[in-house]
Image 1 (cartoon, rainbow over the protein chains, first blue to last red):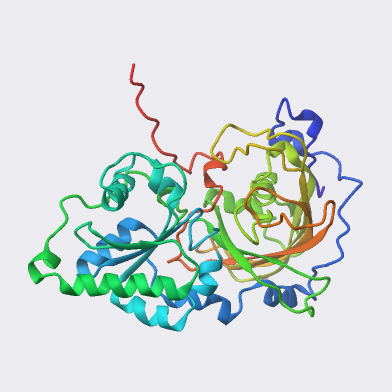
Image 2: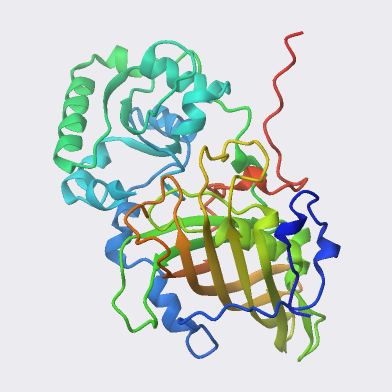
Amino acid sequence: MFAFVLSLAAAATPPTVPDLLVAPPQDEPQTRAQVSATTIAAWRDHIAPRADEDRWLQIDWHDSISAGFKAATEQNRPMLLWLMNGHPLGCT
Amino acid sequence: MQARRSVWSNQRILAMTSNFACAADEVWRLQRDDDPECRWFRTAVRGDTEPVRGSMQGTYVITPQGHLLGRINSANPDHVLKVLTKAIATWESMSDTERSQVAVDAPQPVHRWEDSYPTSGLVLERFARDIGDNPRDPQRAPVNRDTVWFSGQELQGWLPDAKTGAEADVSPRLLERLARFVFVDNVRGQTLPYARAELQGGGLRSKVLAIRGSFVDIEITGHSKATAKGPWIDDDNYWKPKGEFPRFLNCEIFGKATFDRDTERFTSFELVATGERQGRTTFNGRAKDEPNSIHQIGFLLRLADESYRVAPTFINMYGVKWVAGPKPKPDPK
């Protein structure tokens, strides 16, 4: 019930989703760090950014060059544009 | 990512930004694509619309008229501050007439992945961090973010029948999206997704804990397992790596959420995945890992604010109809 299995051996012919509804794998991962109903809040707080890690979000970032241009035009200010491989406001 | 901590968290920089309209964007598309928004950027910075190889990452100051006042690619706040200060001085030295001119061509995009934002769906922001064995360990830096989108139609894939105690498998398509594109090691920088055939096993189960009027409280449990060996086996898209990057990432998953049947929206959604990873990719900052060493990694997914519409990193690989890609270029023949 839990599982679908994707086989590396089937790489030449990718399986369709219904094909994946097979028996649970026997080698379910055994990670040291466990998350459960009693630990989810602690893990959430552990992984979430701290306030000092989100200080850069104090800047009123527009999320595209076109939105920044529109704001710059309306405010008659220069546009400060921060560009990265991967969106700077997302995964970069 | 370093610039978030060094430059854009610096108090002098934060104070200086009030002089600007601030924007952030993805540079790969801007320097290469043929979209009007991209051509506008290249014209402002380089004076022509030709695609640019290499990287144009960095900070730019551009007037509303499309004139470049300064640019720098640095994680040193002092160096960035110097460029911003000079750019503002130049701007203030311009006449009112110059500063009030309207640009002839506004950078209006024809296609952005953000156009596919699922307004009636589920939008989760995702955080990834290196972790220890338990949450009492000291928090480690850095933390990186991303997002994952599900359409309104896909929401049902999370839900069992609306009866207390009812259970069901979460749609395999939704778990596949998580395992391929979300539970990836980009804590320190961009990485590769997993190909579909690299998912070796996994399952996600949803159970109704309680029903409160129109609200359905669910619990989500399961695991995912992805292993990449040998050469890239996915499509020839722009994530295709040049080398081989053997790696794995296994997660145990636990989440809880509340779905409102009246509005057909999740009113809360929180999911944590903890797991182990091994291996590296070109840009994800793991080159110093000991060979074959295994490390703990954690992920948090939670509802994103409606104002946060940055597209997921791997959205071009979702393979669903509700995500619209750019129109193909016309055949010159």
